[in-house]
Length: 640
Image (cartoon, one colour):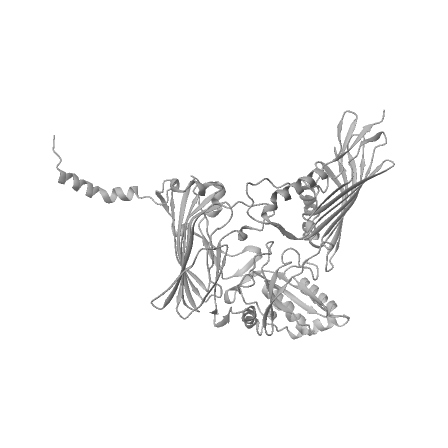
């Protein structure tokens, strides 16, 4: 047998080590994730490192490294991260690597596998903003995806901010950020839900800011929640002075930010001469400024259509009014500027207004000047009144904003700069759903029903689909599948009347055949008193409620239903009057009997409010009472 010397053995091991090490090299194995970070999580952010460097008001860069372990199919959305680029932001590099559950590399994503798209959401057809995204095909869970990127910016008036959580049901192992900027520059920041210290130092004539956080468990969405932003540690970042495309600006105040937007819009309010003449003719018989604003708004709606456009100084500058006049289209900026220009022809001043649109109308920190905005509307202050105009919709009632932009702080741009204003808060008396109906109950439990419902204010949007389509087929589909809360019915006829006033309203009339509305057991009929507007949702029990309970808006429902009973039955049992009164809401149910008719009336009110998380069980009890009160039945017994 050949002897192997110690020297020979070491030589063999040294020779084998590089290949062996390469084969066995592991990164981010899933089994090292702490158990507490897997709880309630579909994905885990293993590492999120960002380094933002400011070279001057015109130039900066961002280096990022993000590592995410996808635990299951529900976490797939976190595997694909979009990386934007445009005239003002170049994506210098993007590397993507995938590892299996053991942490062994299984794929380096090729450039050809990364898709490149134009931002085309919400009807946008024109723009120079694009993004790259890798759509993962990996289905063996868990797996880990690593992103490494570098972007350069040509002018920024909002710095990339830091937020620990990308969303619900994601835990965080480590997240950190470093900001480097010249000694003479100022970094403005605001900490939200972040109480740890921020490390600061100065080295070689640059300022360095660093912070981070470790081991954050996943957040679960809570019913009636104030949202993930109310819980997530985050730090908003912004410069004091900035410059984009030779437009210098300042974030010293809301007024100075308004001045910057005003400078972008300067000289873009010219209406063609022939259209000016038409505008004057169109408004010559109007008796008030309100009538003139309404006439021009409806003219603008009839002439233009919305197309999302992201051109001009990073999507912040509107197309000139002349171009909108010629092309008959524009985005929210262009259409609002066009409407402003039309009003200028008849000497009515207005404010180009920036708003954070969408359902979430909270968590704008007005004490920190920043760009929270994603939409533009128009504010028209007139004698003892203010008219708000949504200029992107061809069907929006005049002077009505709705849930997209109601009740939030906005930046109104004027000749002197900008000022914060607040959009309308619609009251309970305005946000109503009033329902009347007649149910004729037959001896077999079937019913014929005529129901009339009036919707107003915010509740006008309950049947928005019916306004947005003239197709009878689409309208019926909505009524069958989404609106009418009955188990088995046929629509014989329906009609819709719409009143597009400042507080819009509509009336929907339905003629229905309802099968098995009342259930039969022996010689008894059980008739639901409230099947068409029933409260049935009770939020689930939580070990510990984290967020406050929020009612975003005040609303009132009123129901009055007459039940015509079959003549060969008599009433055996009838529910009593019920009142539930709480700061969570008010509920009243009354029932009256006259001959063979039962009159059921119901009122439910809730006020815009926010309640402490500690009251969650009390809130659940209130919802349970509502659910119980709404499902009681009238009992009839057959006359023998």
